[in-house]
Length: 232
Image (tube, rainbow, N blue to C red; front, side, top):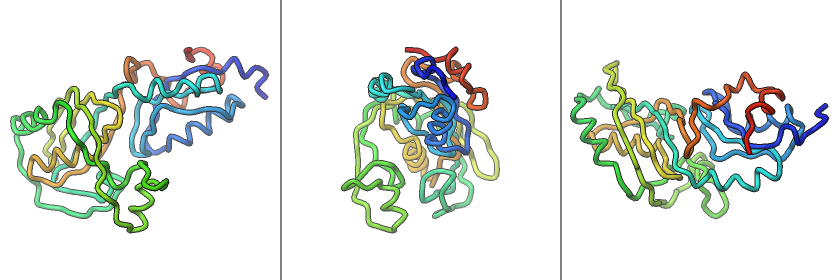
């Protein structure tokens, strides 16, 4: 039984592992702290890993919007030659070509072309709502989804690695504005390289000034760790 809930209130940086939903982390923190009012500054899909900022306690959940507007940084791996319905590794393959041939120079030139402010298509399998219903639910029901676009900014986009497996895999690092869908960016990168593509893996490495290097691994979180690592 938590004797002093105030002792575990604050903000916490967590390193989310792959294969777990963001909401499961919130539930785990509720069990540890005994506090129901807990929120986070941006969902990560189950297949994704990396930095989550969590607010514990009503005083701090009220401030969560301050983090939502901050720019984000990610590292992701894109597979060329294959497309999925969700644009990531959780989806079903909807299109496949013979393995394309691309050079490092071609990829670097392609990535440079994405830097700046632009209009991005919102993926059909996203949490953005239409008439109060998330788009991913409409997509799963086979409903026709109207074209939905918004403005984003790519501050930086670089090639970390180009690996030649059975299908080429491009690992990128990017800094971007809030609301940027890296799954959609992966698809768009593929399109400019004349290839279908999907996002195989994704890791969020920063939110504003907060880095993944500062985050606590999920398996290390207990009441004592929260007290030691929380900030205000």
